[in-house]
Length: 531
Ligand code: GLN
Image (cartoon, rainbow, N blue to C red; front, side, top):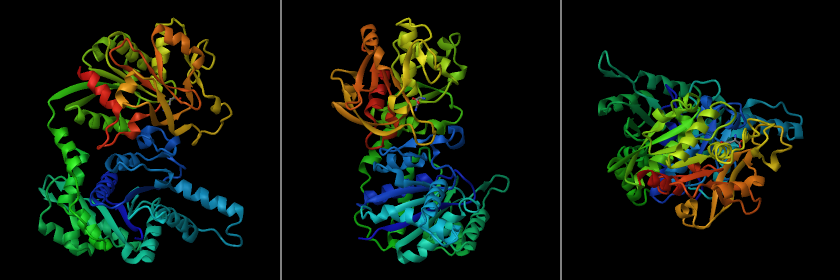
């Protein structure tokens, strides 16, 4: 079967949840037996979000093949369980970079290189790339930004051309907002009409309208929108606010989004979607018997999206443990020896988050010392693991001023040091140790207990590592290496066996937790917090 294409655009306002709608549709089609891939096109000029401050764009998500991507790819993976890759996230920057290097190579010799057709052709090539492998029945491409933005114009133009070329083989879903005006007690459809008009002006007719709303939309309102926007009345559906994003696939099923899309693509409905496991998860999410309070210590806590995958991992791990995980957001810059006791004493567990640079480091060390000395379950991720090593060096091994060379290049005790492979790296973009690497676990360790196997694959994003020169000293004092990369010998996990549950991981387990397969380390961490 040749691949069919679904495009998802957004109008009226940003942050309406295009990524969640795209993921939910993917889930529903997958549950009907279709092979689906999600893709995101981002209109910014950065080659990827790897060099962006999380305050700008939330978390940077990392794929198995080491692509630094938009956080929507995390949703795609968490909903469908299908790994994404470099090909699933394309930015304007990447498109231009490729076109410009082709120009330099002489591929367009004699021609004036222009937005149309050269940039739009490159966009179309990237959209079709996923489909061309023949692995997928449906490719769902989400266009970042809001219709009407200057930046997203070339993407929409490429979609217009592609839809023309594909004929019946594509569907365009446009997501908009129907605001409720309190003063008049009315739901307003005008912004949707204007947004569809903006699409029509550039030659694109949506097939399905998903209206984000806080209140149920009646048949009358839907008919009105259908009439003004040239869309079939049954293809005007609502996306009502729900308490968890994981309910959206169920809501979209109720609204028959999957049926509408399959019909328009000319694909058989197959059997009813099998959402058994999904519903079981949702049930557990809402019917828990216990609660835990976990302190998430980081420097971007004002913006919860900066730690998106960690938050979702806690939701998944909580559900299997029959427990609701309440996150206490702790700003590492506000934590110090004086307030540690009052800020941390009511926590059942502490997670120290990944990060870069100096800011907030002192607070992270305070949180780790508190967890270690008070026997509070601790999970340190990436920088959080490195800080656990530094805290142990300073306070247990009495290595005064022990540090990471990232923070103190001239430290006497560089217990965390730049990886060998990083010594000659000067450029910042895409040059970290990125993507999935093998790790061998030590039998009997907490990590081994959690994973239940000896060999694992986890995703990385860092430049620094535990300095193996100090391994023996650490082991003798009670912090042991329990996970090692079999090829490079790098320390990937440290633990304190004498502690209730103290695990630091150099990799990012949060990128691999999904609804159907919650991450074993998060599951074990929550279990320890409950005991
Ligand atoms: N800054 C640290 C490093 O580069 C940790 C990175 C992270 O937490 N992702 O090694």
